[in-house]
Image (cartoon, rainbow, N blue to C red; front, side, top):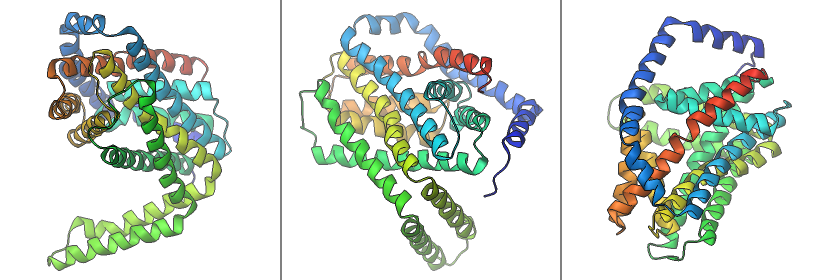
Length: 351
């Protein structure tokens, strides 16, 4: 994967921003956002305000702080990834870029395209080359997958009836899960050859499965290229070494912060959910939302959370109030703060 000078990357982004097709897609995304997300939320603001008024202020404050921790963790990931690649990216600016990325992902929601573009533009502006930026995104995706698997595993191990006593100590299992996810990513980074061999072995099994059915497929044809790209990405990670291991730990807190925010929101409305139940509800919602895609995924995400809590025996009305409060914190809190952060980054020429 060749390294491209930063100036060329910025010029390409500017040309893309001026392209009529990109502008048309942006307008379409904004219209869909208004129809599917903003309008229903705006019409239901009085009801939403009622949910907030009935919430416990202490737990609600904890939910807000958990959202702040989420973006602080994402900022630390960018800072440490940049420094490991020999580029300076101050934590304050990186956290603002993470917040701006969160807002962009909600305004241009398709596959998180807006958020990805903001983070790539910020890292490019700080001086990272394309290969290092690709390594950062690979790390983030690897950790996200590993961390979700670790949390589900932990939730199943803890069992359905574990720990009815929530409280501040209830978040400790999530910290343990983040360490498990980090350990898995550390293994991938320190043993890239073994990881690549594992990927190749899996690829051969898939290849033989496709051949046994007597037909070629696009997967079979694309598999060698996919494995080459995966091996190259793992080598990028192994070169950066210790800095990325630290980054992996802090990036786990981006998911941890969001999940903690859901847990505290649920508790603020009197739903005494256990941590394993919140882990399962959040993971089910994440998988459902990713499968459907945005903006439709927002309703599917809420539905998956509600279905999970209801199936686990919690009061549906209170769970609905809690999910709406969490969604408001995640959506309405992120967009205005993210736009302010983006404006400040443009002012200091960091974006």
